[in-house]
Image (tube, rainbow, N blue to C red; front, top):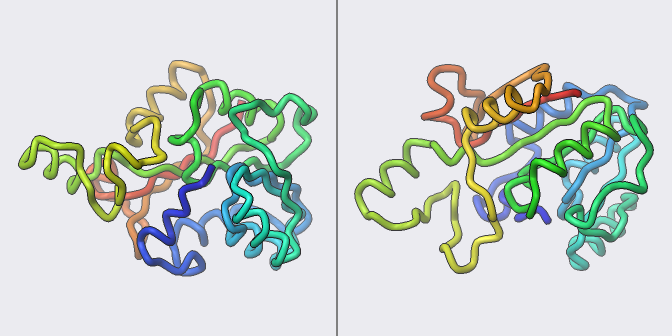
Length: 205
């Protein structure tokens, strides 16, 4: 499910500030489920920290790489549901740049809140100024560092901003525990909906 944005942007995952933020949130020994775990880079970082982490991924190539890293990954598509997981069976459920690619993101988030005590959601902030400017000047669907795909080959099914997600949480009465915004190198605190390329929310039911 994950589009492996770190590859698209030519970035080392370990050096991304959002990954450091996630790693600092999770304590050794906690149980974590990474949905759309891709090649398992985040899982490996958490495993090396002593976190009990497992993933779900539908891409066979990604699963093979995860197995080579000795990571525990189930083959599956989260759009097919998470009903086989018990309530609050994980301390954290992670959706790292995955939710915008799902068919029914609202339903998946609710399922994550059921099986996880807390849910970490990271997604591209589609209200970033480069995207706004590209649409304004070209009148076409933008292709930028943040959105390196064309309209006909993009895996993204939904486009949202930090403000959109805030509105969703308010409407669904979901508690936001933490929010943070990032670009490639640092956390963004001033006008994040305009200047951040990634939005991160930690939520619970």
